[in-house]
Image 1: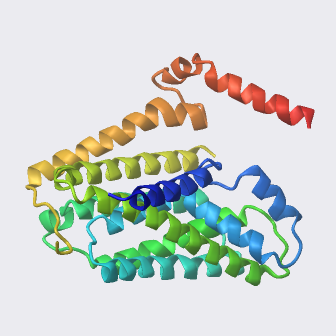
Image 2: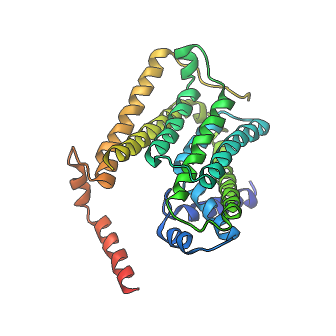
Image 3: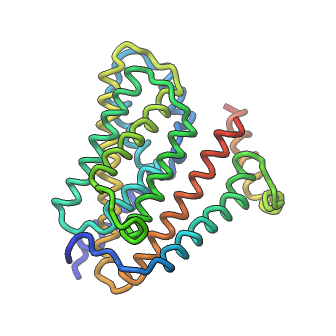
Length: 229
Length: 69
């Protein structure tokens, strides 16, 4: 094995992890103050914020892990990820531009539900229980819509300047895709290495069960927030 | 390898996995997340974790730094 094959993924991993040390998932204080103080077009900063948001967005990432867990052909991976991307991009833009008012806890709970759904689906749950498997592509697209609303509501928590908003939003959206690309790259890297070992099939069920557990955990977390605030 | 190569498991095992995942999620939620995020501490584990001072010290440090700025 030559050095490049070891070093490159390690550097990649390191770069990804550095961004994760940023505060997870929400919008952290520095971002908050930037967004509130910003006036006009700030494409670059919004792009960075979008990327950071996606890389630290564990609920979005968990869903993606579930989606690509049993996808092996690059075409399929690109296809499913594209459905997710289209879904979340549409509602991100729509949500912020129309200043849609959605309860953040409920949306996040639905996003958590998407994680449970995917884990369950990966275990073949729908085929076993209901005989039918719901159209996975459609499900990814539709859940993608909810993920986008989640992104939008997080961003909406701060009253930012309406001038140049659309441009900034496009930057944010592009950033989200960049973050998604990076995170996905890391996940695919890990998966493709893991897939070479027999432990992959052995632990595939366990992993998807853990995915469901994480989803249930997050559902509980979000619903508690909904009922207590 | 082909796509959609999902491991086949019986109904019983599936239900078992579902229940276990709910239990794991619920356990972590009640012991760690609820106490930490909402101050809801039904099992008193929050107090247990709280007595581990490393989190408190980190928060104190952060606050001190912010004050100095």
